[in-house]
Length: 374
Image (cartoon, rainbow, N blue to C red; front, side, top):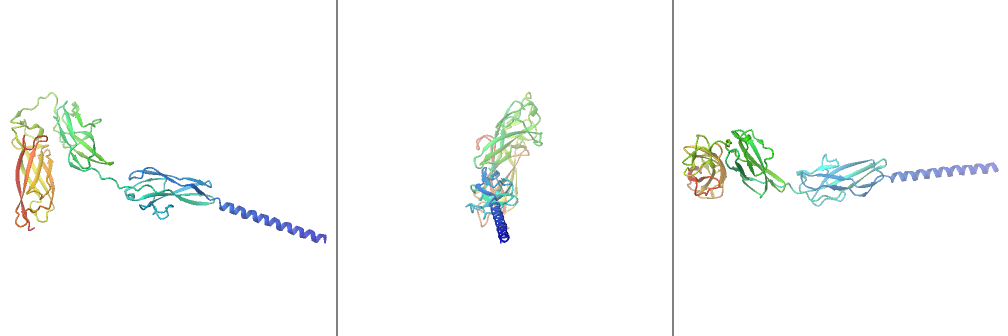
C-alpha cells in the first residue's frame, strides 16, 4: 500500500509540472503576440504643400522598438479621404521619406502611410492630409519686347525699358555684351540694374538687355534688340545732315531728327490673298529713312480699316528695317460680306517717345487682295 501511494503521488507531481510548463508557454506566446509595434503619435508631413516643393515625412512615435520603417505617399481627393489613407491611391515610386510635389498633385491632398516593423510584426499609421495643392501659376506674357535708349558711346548711359507684360510683374535686368551683329552674347558680370554705363571693353560691340518678369512665383524672360555698335568716347559724333546721320548702312531710330522723316517702304502679307477662311495674318512692314536706309528700333503700328476686322499690333523694327506683326481675325471681318475685294490697313511708323502725330513719324494706307469665295 505504501508503494502504491508513493507512485500515485509521483504521477500527480509530474502532471502538475507539465501543467505549469504549458501555462508558461501559453503566457509567453501571448506576450510575443502583443509585442508588435503600436503607433502612439501619428506621422506628420513637414513642408509647404505646393507644386515644386519637397515634403518630408515625420514617422511619429511608436512602441515595440521598431527595427525598420517603410513609407508610402498617397494622393487623396479634395476631402482628404479616410483618416488612415486606405482609400487614397498610392503614388507609384513614392516610397522615400521625402516627396517632391508635382503638377499631377494639383487639386489633391497628400498623406503618407508609415509602416513600422519589428521581430513580432508590423503596423501602419497614416498622417493627416495636407492642404489642397493649387495648380502652378501661369507665367507673365510679354506683349511688347524690352527696348534700350541712349547713345552707344563709351561713357554714355543706356537705359532699359522692360516693355509691356501681362499680370503686372516685377522685373530683373541683365545686360549682355554681343558681337557687332548682335550675336554671341554673354552676360556682363554685375550689370543687373535698369541702367548701364558703357565701358571701354564695350567698344566695337553691341549690347542687349534681358528682362525677367515674375508674378506669383512664375517667371518669363524677353530680350531687346541690340544697340548700335559702341563707338569710342573720343570719336566725334557723326555729322547730321537734314536730320540724317552720316553713312550708308542701317540707322538707329534715335539717330534721326527732323526734318528727316520715316518712310513705310514695303509690305508683305501672309497669306498673300485673304480668304473667307483666314483666321490670322502675318504682316511685315519695312521702315526706311534718309534715302532708303533701313531704320532699326522704329515702332510700326498697323490696324485694319474699318476697325474690328483683325487685331491691331505694334512692334519694333529690326536691324533690316522690317517689323513682323501677327494679327488675329475679329468678328468684324469681312467688313462687306457681299463684295469685299481689299483689306485696307492704316500703318504708322514712329520714334519711341515722340508724339505720334509729330516728330519724324509717318502714316500710310496700304491694301491687300481679298477673295471671299475661297
